[in-house]
Length: 169
Image (cartoon, rainbow, N blue to C red; front, top):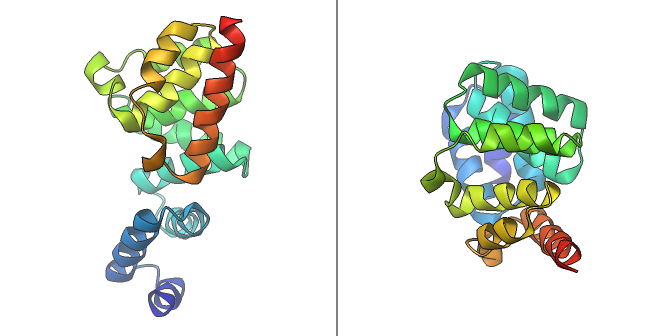
């Protein structure tokens, strides 16, 4: 992996190294190295909206360069408004800007069956909780298995659980 990483730093067009690093960092749930990998990718491939979206999401979760994260999320969403991943990240970016109502409008345009997918349900639950819809948030949070999340997402999961408890009391 170290060799692949060095190769990719020297030649960001090395797709084989990028793919191997991406697979490894995802498997290890290594968000710090994913941020570095996606940053390099975005800096050298401005048209890679998937990398832009993923960098935005990880940055939002880690409180890194939030201005850039919001811009990347917004750009990806504007590029393909029908993409549920881009829509989810943009909604989460709005939430991080304390624009919970707008976030809810954006994310609720996603079909219900897709909102129930565990990789999206966490973010929907966070937005529902921010909009004081505790019971709905609890139901969606129940679809998520914390052990399958990145550490940053596990922290978000705990935060949403606490918000729901506060709303219910």
